[in-house]
Length: 172
Image (cartoon, rainbow, N blue to C red):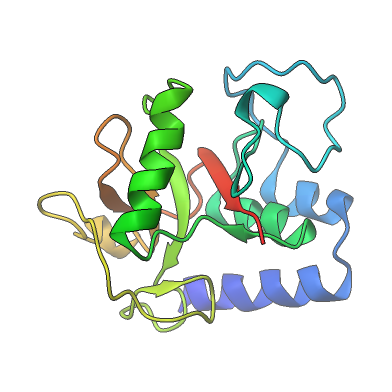
């Protein structure tokens, strides 16, 4: 229930105000992530040139799942959706090419709507294709409602949505 209340509050505030300052207040300041960027501006909508890709935008900051979702939506993109073997392999190839497999990443997968059905995005389709790590999802302490990728293996893991980690947006 608490997660649903947070989600509704977050969504209403985002739709009504939608400003970066509000997002910073709700989700906290960005945390350094170790990625290097040739750009000193943090307001760009494109990834650093080294990671430029027609489908994927690697954010240069770490955010929790809600902040990552808002970041992508502000740019008219979506948090990464890995709904087929093809897109998962393409995404893994991208991460491998730039030696980024060592980081965990948020996906759009969550069960925030009813706390039991896994979906892509807040109101998207239910998961048909899955790539869960062994023993996952486990909903540890009944607090894990968002899907992240384990570092290295990139298998799926349910985790607390408030965790601050890396994320990638899927461009339209």
